[in-house]
Image 1: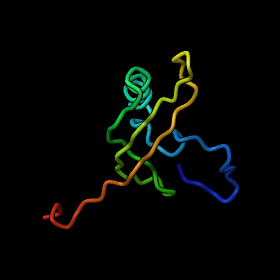
Image 2: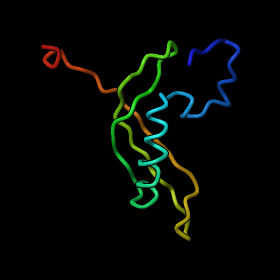
Image 3: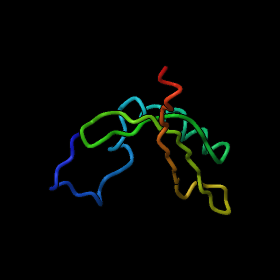
Length: 88
């Protein structure tokens, strides 16, 4: 997805910023796991404005109410950088 200045950034969702395979993986694996266990950790990807994939380490937390029902999810994603020694 390539973004323009006219894009309403307030309406963006995380799935708009990830490649299709990552969206499916999160929906099929990460979200159900975080619902069951409270937290999921794994590797996915984000997209640059030009559509290039950036590998990330991602955490998804399921926040539940007193009844144990999920009220919302939060996520943290950190870029996985390749060190110079990995490039050899």
